[in-house]
Image (cartoon, rainbow over all chains, first blue to last red; front, side, top):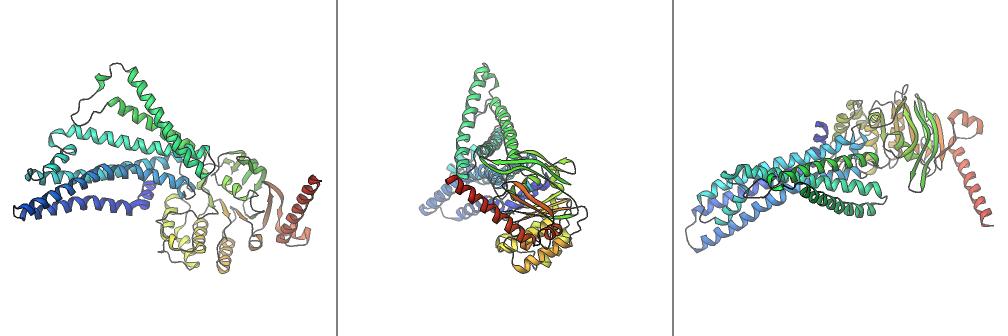
Length: 263
Length: 243
């Protein structure tokens, strides 16, 4: 497994490093801008500069958290899997079982999610410390950061993070299972792509139906609801997502093992 | 020994292997020849444990070919298979990580023999150079079975001589070496056995020396005449059907 993860790292380390540097870079730049603003006189020009930084800062941090982390967590396993099951899959020439190969991709995605969230989380925490001193002028940023980080709501945020983690890995496995189903059913590449999209929607529909069914079966659903201020997370849904992701993983492994064709 | 018993593979309606029977014995270099689309690559992939949708039996030393047997079977696919990040050295590192029988020193020696720079990225190399790296990586494995599918594709004349030299220098006492090619005249000097295929079946096989003596011509010429006769027959049959 270590060797497989090492191979994944070798394949994607450059683009990952760029993303990680950008993540930290945005936070550092924002910090520098704030430091500069502090030295400016309190006139109209300074006010508008402050507003500009505030807005750009909000957007940057938002994009970091809402786009970058999810992108890394599920795009990498999907890209890696899609490349390997195509004609370029060198790893399938090796005596490594398919379940290990696919698991390594999922684990790599999980690792990326953890590292990027730690980095963005750290950046947000730092910004939060800085902005708390300038709460009046950076009100917008302050409010936005509160969604992601607040000293009072640590369990909420951990739950939010965990649900994001499970959802993204579940989404990655859904795409991977759809690709494997498309490849299993069709011969031509075009048909495989179209069928993968169709299967993706089918899998989503089945999941939705099953979730509805579970909601109906558990009549005292409210008992399972955990009350969170920031987000309404149902533990039953989370457990269901984990089980569904595990099933998709098994489907993906079986079909990939059945139809690995690298040349 | 590598044994294929009544092996059939279909791609939809197309039959790639049609009840293929053959036993490849250690200590020999087999030339697998036949026209394009006769099933050579499918046979190689099946023997390498990469195809699962076949009927019949494929065994190596009595063990059914599977993911586990890939540890003892070195396979060179027709198409270049490598990751974009890889340099020549990275290719060696990958093989060393995943194959216990890979000899990194031997790989480096072959790379130097081919006159290649180990630090160059595979994506920056010509087709022939990439082919040489892939041949070196495959042959640097001390595997029981070596399957080379069109190993000379894209390689220049000097490079072809070098590949032939390396194949001949391999310690082959306990090895089955199978080379699939549609350009057999370039490999006749290397092989000691030949298996001719057509439409997924063996149509002729045997010791190269015996075949030469029996038919009084080189195996390349025998191959040409055999397939010319077959094409002629097929044309005649087509003509009769049209009548």
